[in-house]
Image 1 (tube, rainbow, N blue to C red):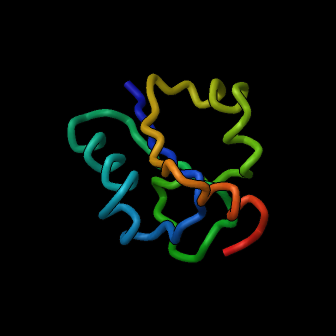
Image 2: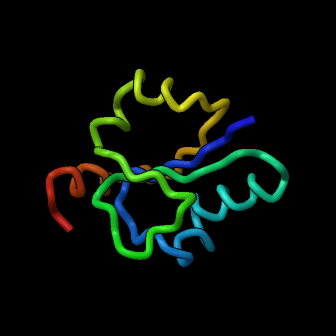
Image 3: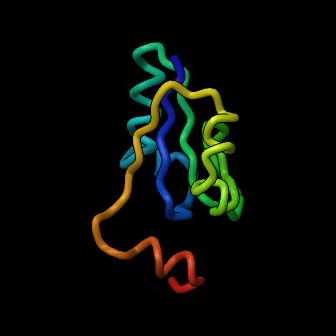
Length: 92
């Protein structure tokens, strides 16, 4: 089975990400025998973990892109308050 995680904010993707948040879910899924990778928007950053998929934000809204991954499930790690919109508009 393939269970991926996703955060819609482009964090640093090194070992620090994989020790918390959706990165920690990804590693936990791997420990119980599931195939798992974490997904977040570009840009690619130096030190990104190999279990991280960086993609254009538009792909996160594209059903065909998600289907192309062939995953069985997804944990979306997001917030209930508008952080996503400020990042999409290029604001910190």
